[in-house]
Amino acid sequence: MRKILVSALLAAAALYANCALALDSSSTPVVVTPLASRTTTASGQPITLPQKNVQVLVSTYDIAVGATLPVHRHPFPRYAYVEAGTLKVTNVETGNSNIYKTGDFIIEMIGQWHQATNTGDGPVKLLVIDQVEEGAKNTELRQ
Image (cartoon, rainbow, N blue to C red; front, side, top):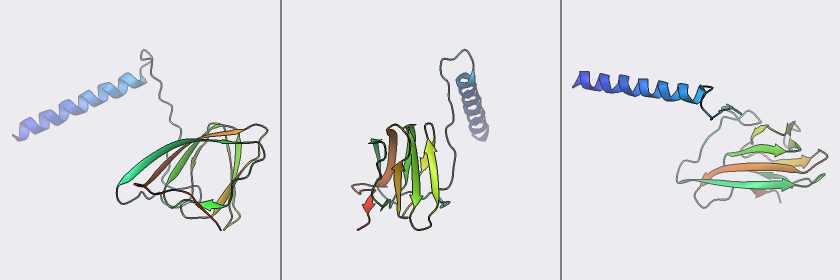
């Protein structure tokens, strides 16, 4: 039984290796370009996921030139890919800011008050992915 398990594991590893090589091969019409690999948010917090009934929400945002979003925070992880434009995100608790441009990937801070401003000369377009507890919202506005 042990020999069968070892053989199966080796076969699976060989198959995986062949598939991985195929994705990297120049003869394959698929190009994988890593965009980000992080374990912390924009403010250095460890990324923590909801503990029950995770729901993934995907949306797009179009932010006009000069527009500033209200001060808000996210109780759950939020990720954004900047498809176009320049966005300045400021943590209003610390005063620290980050500038994100086309092609950047944002891992937003969790539970910290912040706001964003389009500081570029064109609209900002974002692809936003939230991971929330099912039925929950991921944006709280400061009153």
